[in-house]
Amino acid sequence: MKEFLQSLFKTTEERIRNPFIGAFMTSWLLFNWKPILYILLSSYAIGNRIEYVEEHFSNYILLFWLPLIAALFYVLVLPYLNLGFDRLLKKSQLKRNLIVIETQKRNIANQIELAIGEIKLEETKTSYRERNSHNQLVEALQKKNRDLEITLDATMEKNNSALEDLKAEFSNREKIRVDEIKSFERNYSESREEIMALNNAMFEKDKQIQNLRKIVSDLERKDSNKTLSYLLEFENGLKLIERFDGNKITYLNPETNEIYSDQKAEILKERSQHSRKML
Image 1: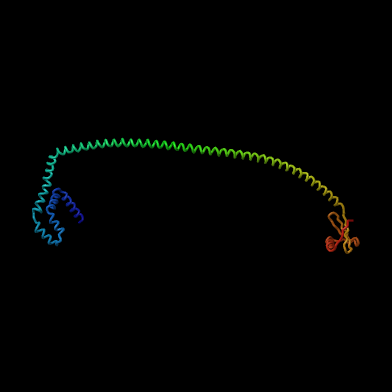
Image 2: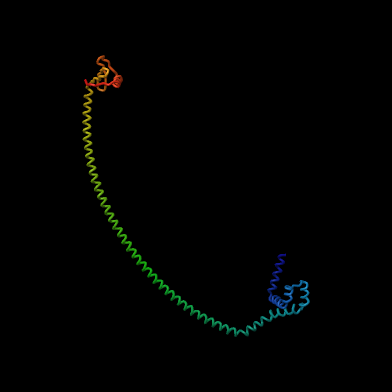
């Protein structure tokens, strides 16, 4: 079904494109526009509209012969008429074309002259703008150069001042450093002399200490060979002889020849007062 419809539409399209059929259909519509509009736009029932069209517009001249004559005229006669008109109007068209061409030439020449003038004007404007821009650029560069020179001078002056300050500070620091070195050397020399004096004094003290140690050693040696005796008299009438024989201490009762121990003698010393005499 689909292929049938496509074939039908294609055949119809080809026939409509045929010059005669197209001309006939156009002519038929022009001669029969009234019944078409009546059927489409009338407010009566469709049956009444059809009956009215059959009664008033069933004329074969309008329906067939006039559209056929118009189509034949359009297809067969009109091309020859157009050809005849073209031949009749050929000279006038040629002259008219020449006039149009001359007019176009003059217009083109005027446009060329105008374009040349506009180009020259643009070149002049461009040259002026470039010259003006160049002058402005030169002035800007000169101003920038002056500003840079001023800035450079100020910077150099500032740097020179800073350099002088640095030199002065360096000189002061160098002087302080030299003074500190001299002071350090002087203090070092004095400290070294003091150390040497202290070393000498310590050496002398060591010698004195050695001599004292020797004397003490000699005294101890003499004392170790000597026996010391003391008489202890207590409040109760008791008498004890305390003897130091080197590192040994003995307590003797001279009345009874009793020897007291160190512990017993210490207890007696603590409990009662006593006097001590060297024998």
